[in-house]
Length: 136
Image (cartoon, rainbow, N blue to C red):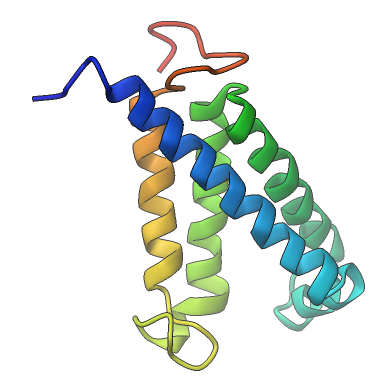
């Protein structure tokens, strides 16, 4: 059974930790790889530059929305799709273990599951703009 007295706080913890992870992840793209470097990497995958900018925006604004609790379940869905995209386009060919050269797909898969769980749980406690009841 679900422990209803603490489940809103479990969703809050999941929501905030996922949001922090996305801000750290996008920070790596901006400050370490640099935006031009990340755009170049996308080009090496055969993807348009605009897609790289969209990923940066999604991770930054999505991470903030998760932390603040702004329609978090709905924000989790495109972030989960992005993680699935990284499995298909980047990490899938590197094997299962994320410690493999180039990073395998275990970490993005786990991240995807966490985002789906957040979608199913809902906003949790202390959300600034929670989704409507019955909306998901």
